[in-house]
Image (cartoon, rainbow, N blue to C red; front, side, top):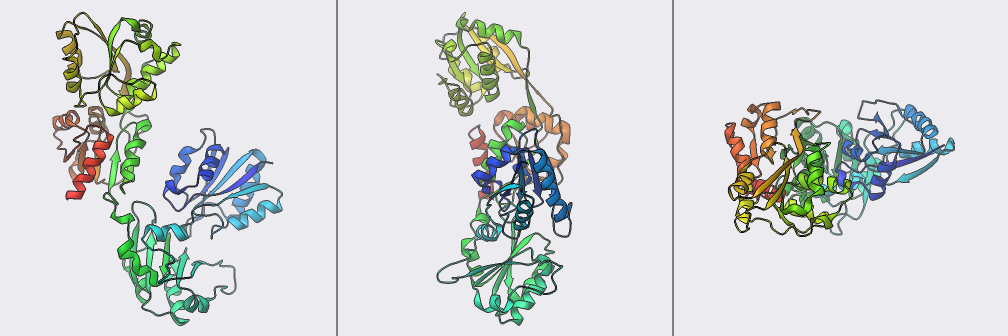
Length: 495
């Protein structure tokens, strides 16, 4: 028999998973996950892991609890590590206790990995501290949906209404009218502050505040649907001063990242930290050219080169993969002037143990030419490993300066194997190269861009957009990911 881990996935924001929880997801041979567990966490699973959706959405169940229990037993017989991934914390209204009892009765070894419970974290993201020495000294977590098989309620409504400062109801959206009525009937002031928090900790978080006596009417007015958390108490009144999460500069903005899959997280994470809701829509795929006889020959004869120019992080990665594959290392580059087109490419070189000799002030091909103007290129050989399709500005300058430019295509940019759908019009679409522009227009057309803001990483990309009749409302002043993020933030800060 294997071991079952009951893992809390946290409230929604993937960064709120615990280190132990993420470690178990990476090790699991089988993951059985619920509706409230953020599916992005599954991207950390092993490629060969069996992934099973167990459902458990309000009024919709893919599997009953009995079926889930039997599934845990079946998978524990097959695998050594089984993760039961549950939203929030497995032991806070998550039926984790029931599953643990079942596993114990069946003699299956199990372990509980606590999660950040939504009962605490969601109010915190809404700017509501559940306790405060001037407002609330006690807090109670209450299920808003009791077991339907029970003949009577086990909730002490009188004690809740008169003896607890802050009440947090989980899974109570469908019963919000009943909750309000029971609290008021048992002595709570109808004017007590209350709120409903939906999609808590996520970029589309929404909070509806009201008095207790009006909260069900507000829920109906705003067509509130589960899941959601209800908070009742004087402490809710602090929200107007403490609503930090919704004040982030890009909060709620849906921003499309069009970069290749392996490069998209850096931009996406930087924008998400500003509050954006990221839609990963890769329109380009980077494929190394293999086999590459010309590259192998260049690596064997590196001592011939006066300089090597790297115009992207992709060129760095693919070149050094080939270097190591040919049983060589950075010592083979001694005596060669190394030129990087910008900070990101320079950083990529440093991770390989190479400090570039030159980085232009202007991070474009024209910037590299300014550096080359200070070098004696006559009869000297320059190595330029790059994409199969690229501008020839650098090549032409070297040739016109009587230098010898060995242009070696080392990767192709093509369309992605899987094309994602854009379900709704985003607020911003980002473009980080001319290739992303061309491929986006080819796949989706340019009509969708008429109703959203277009953000470009620099003048070359902006020029390609103009060639297609598309205006860029945002252009980075520094032509890298950080510069693009700053430009988008600046745009919305001004507007």
